[in-house]
Length: 330
Image (cartoon, rainbow, N blue to C red; front, side, top):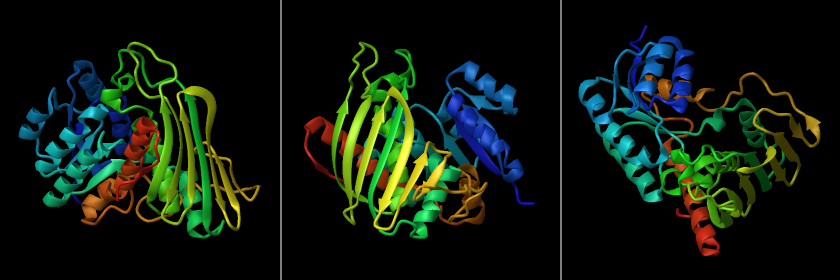
C-alpha cells in the first residue's frame, strides 16, 4: 500500500470540516496531519470530530513545522491568493475553495506560482462532481441536443450567507454574489458547453441596502461564447424560487431541476446513475488525491481550466459597474 498523502487543512470552519468528512470517506489515500485556524474553537472542533491533534493558529507556523504533501484551503475569500501562493511556494499541491481569488490578476499569480513550482492547483468547483450535473455533461458530450444554442440558468435563494458579523456580508472580503455563488453556476455552464465566454452584459445590484451588509446580491447577465451560444443567468439572495438549468440545442432540450433532478431530455425523465463516468474521478477529493498519487494532470477543475470562469465573473462585475457590454479576458 502506498503511503497516504499528507494534508495540511488550512481553515477549520464549516467548509473545512466538509472537506475533512470527504477525505475521511477515502480511507488511507490521504490523511489530515495538521489544521490551521485563528479560532481555538474551530481548531478544537477539528480535533474532536476528526482526531487531528496537531493544529496551529497561523499559516506561517504550520508551514514551518509540518511536513505535508498537499494543502486544502478553506478560508475567507480575501485570503485565498496569499494563502495559496504560500502553500505552493512551500511545495504543496493545493486545493483552494471557490472562488479562486477576488481579481483575475491574483488568479494569474496563483497559476503562475503553481506552474513555476510544478505543483497541482485545483479550484473547489464541487458542482462539477454533482451526479446530475455530470449526467447533463455526459448527455451533451453524446450530442443529445445537437449544437448548443442557448443555456438558461437561475439560482434564486434567500439569505446572504451571513449577517452583519460575517465576512461574507462585506463586498471587499467576499466579492459579493458573483464570486460567492455565481462562480458555481457560471463554471457549470462553461464546463457543459466546453467554451470560453467572449462578452457579457450584466446588471449587478445591492437591492436591499443595509449599513453593515454591503454585498452585491442580485444579478442578471447575458454572455456569448466562442460559437455564439448565449448564456442567460440570474442569481439572487432574495427569493426562494430555487435552481434550474435549461440547455437548448438545435436538436433538443435538457432541463435539470436543482442539482439532483429530476432531469428531463425532450420532456422525458432521465435516469441519473449513482456514478457518472467522465474524465478523472467522480469526487473532488478523489480527483485531487489520485492526481497527486499518480503524478498526472488534473482531469477536472484545474486552476488553468477554471480561469475562464473567473474571467467571466470579473467581466460580469465590470459590466455591472459600467453598464456596458464587456469583453471577457482571454
